[in-house]
Image (cartoon, rainbow, N blue to C red):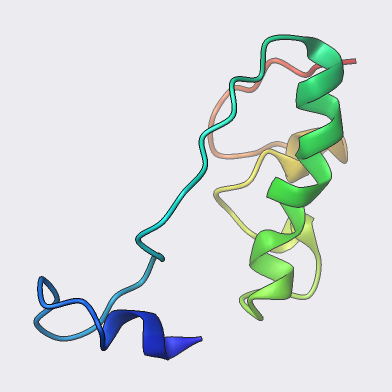
Length: 76
């Protein structure tokens, strides 16, 4: 997990995000709904929080009918 930053000469101390990505255009509400769980559970899988709603910067709070940090328009 932490080895990704070691092989990158641009890093001086550590690397938080992996360098590679595969952007996907979310052009329909169905595509967004399909990927929301993945996005919401990333902080849980990384061990930052116990549940998606506990991560303060996630829209998971809003989908759980709690107030998040920012106003979010829900896709339903």
